[in-house]
Image 1 (cartoon, chains in turn orange, brown):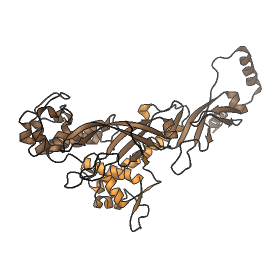
Image 2: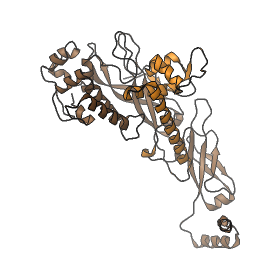
Image 3: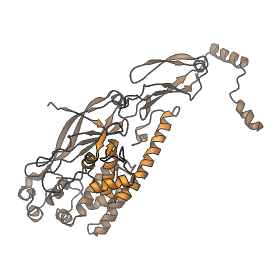
Image 4: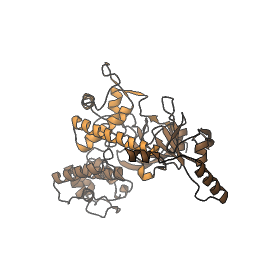
Length: 117
Length: 325
């Protein structure tokens, strides 16, 4: 069977999505998305612009916010606080990972040592 | 259809109150939610917990589930003959014969009864009238560091829920070919537009989200786009300097090691790491270690002795300074 190859797009700081695209991709309501911006969990590229644009990495954050809100039955404020803690943990894990990678003779990380970011 | 004991999954009695069910769910969600948990198999466990809660929190679905009877987890079963008339009235399951339940998932069966068959997986709105966008799919993809470096075309075999013309849910295998861009890193998320579930009534399909896991490499360690490799040197190579052949993901390169190189020193090879979407690649760092031969012959021993006698190098000079302070 011949299957077409689909392109996977990186969700990172180098591409952009609009406010309405972010709504569709995250499943968040208009109000929840605006609240997440108000609480600082998501930052538009230019907060003063008439129509907000976001880096496509915000899709990852917004979808996480959507899951946390739905699965823990949390409001946008609580989700923002939780996202802040999750982000701090991820930053610390990333720093630890970098220290381990750069440490002499540490050897390649075992599968169980890999850190999800 | 395989039986799942939702009460057992949540760890509650069959007569548990709605409040007890909610408490049990919250406790397990805290433990297994993939966004906050570091437990092994967190995602798998959370899916089970979430599925159990979706059923038991809804009185209608819970009653329908209770009437399926109690079976051993994983046991093949069929709903009792009168079950469809009682609980599936008006749903596509009402007219389904006893033989039609083989490829139906219990969660899809129960979700289908209350018209909420679509929705939880992707965050797009479900359970509403009119066109419904297809659900998003998520998959974890393990790739090698070489694939991350060069980019790769991979085939994924997913098991997804699809709906037939009558709106009945079926688990079906779904194969998809995806091109992974070069330079992806461990933990990175990728989006494949339009490769999620089919939309209904003309609505667009969902997307496929990939969670990239880069497998550990026998030589290289990663930190973002930077790579690290251990570079063992013999003592004389470190003292006199040398040129070594160093492996990189793009093939071996010749690395000049300056005289007087110390253990722990990092020698940087610019732009030999993973490529960044911005164009500039990460770096490769060779971390120096000094290794000594454990077996030496007479000639070598004699040379070391001669070196020891003629050298005034004191690697522990700072001990004396510390003791004098």
